[in-house]
Image 1 (cartoon, rainbow, N blue to C red):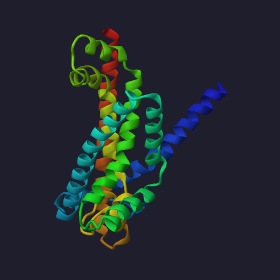
Image 2 (cartoon, rainbow, N blue to C red; image 1 turned 60 degrees about the vertical axis):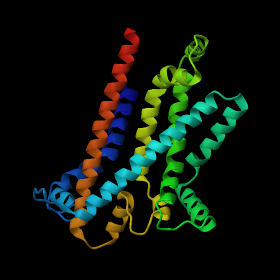
Image 3 (tube, rainbow, N blue to C red; image 1 turned 90 degrees about the vertical axis):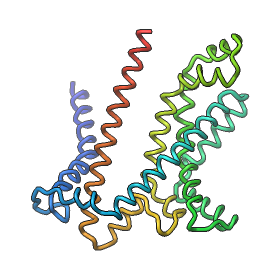
Length: 267
């Protein structure tokens, strides 16, 4: 009984430590306070500033285009890599798994420096080009897509693919109609993770981005060093919106996952 109570108390304490700062920030985003801790008065000023600021909206649009564009490419490459490793010989699969772990474990600052040196210093690419930034984000995201797809490949019934080939289906048709539907949840999870990683990344972005381009992460860091109070507080509103979107996405994914499991059981 004591262990159960202490375990519950520990979980509640951990949840408070994780979510209390976010809830506090969300609360102050609906006030006219200029700093956390001040006596607030209710206001939608921060959200109005966020919506009407052309600079902030351009930054958000650029961040989303970068995140979703890189996530699509990373999802394709990560999925193809997982499929290639899974259907290869054992030593090839082991080698692919080991190589995939390097970018995952490697520090972002090292990846950012490496991409910057390779593409700009070695190949002489323009610093104002978006290519190093895109490559850096793909290098960051693709290994995590790989890690999301591989477990699904191991869980699926591989005999179905072989049966499709025996019945006359070409490898591409069998892949499209048999394999991809079974690993679709892993692909979707990998894509969502890739979007999140791209949105959140700071180090790789700061080393590879053009000087005139900012993502949410780099913009927030630069804004905290400036003196524009209205921009800083507008970022509270942006953080709240991002948090709400993430919560809604997680709820939808969980509901979809449960529905999928119930349909499998019924089948």
